[in-house]
Image 1 (tube, rainbow, N blue to C red):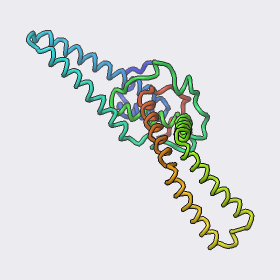
Image 2 (image 1 turned 120 degrees about the vertical axis):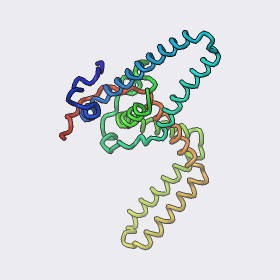
Image 3 (image 1 turned 45 degrees about the horizontal axis):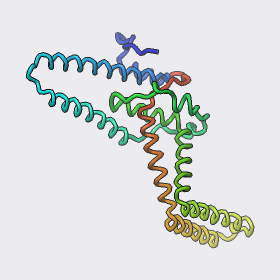
Image 4 (image 1 turned 180 degrees about the vertical axis):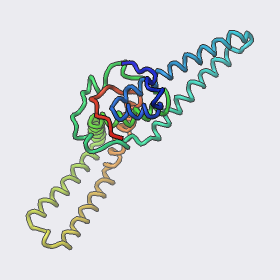
Length: 242
C-alpha cells in the first residue's frame, strides 16, 4: 500500500495526521513515507549535482568523488550513532513477552525487500522502538541462544552457573525440610551466606564474563536488525480517543 501525501492536509496538520496513523497502528505507512521522501530528496540532489558538474568544465573529478564519499558516509554514521544512543526498550511491556512469538521466517527475517537503510535518525528510532516491541520474544530467544553458546565456549562458567543453581536449590530444600521460617535471624544469616557464596562462584568462574558477552552480542544484533528491518503491517488497533 503506497503512502501518498496527506489527503487531509487542508484541514488536518501533518503532525496530527501522523499522530493518528500511530494511534491506528499504521506505523509502516510512516516508515514508507520516510523512505519515499528520502529517495525523492536524493534524486533531486543528484540531478542538481549533475547539472552543476556539467556546467563547471574545470571541476576536479577527484574532489567530486571524495566529496560524494564523505557526504554519503557522515549521514550514515550519524544515523547509526543516534540509534545506539536511543533506548530501544522504552516501549516494552510485560504483555509483549506474553504475546505469541512472530514467525521466524516470514515475520522476523522476511525477504530481501524487508530491509533498507533508514533515511534519517527519526525513521531509525521509530523502527528500533517498534521492532523491539514487536519481536521481543524473538530477541529474547536469541539472547538465550547466545548465552548458551558463551557457556559452551567457557566450560568453567557453565560449571559456575550450575553450582549457583545447586546452592540455592539446597537452600530451598533445607528451608522446606527444617522450617527456617520459625528462626528469622538464622534464616537471614543463611540467605546472606548463600548470596556471598554465589557472588564468589560467579567471580571466580567468570560467569559474569559469559553473561556480558551474550548481552553485548545480542544487543548489537537486536539494534542492527531493528534498524534495518522495515516495519511490516500488523493487526490494527482501534484509534485512541482524544
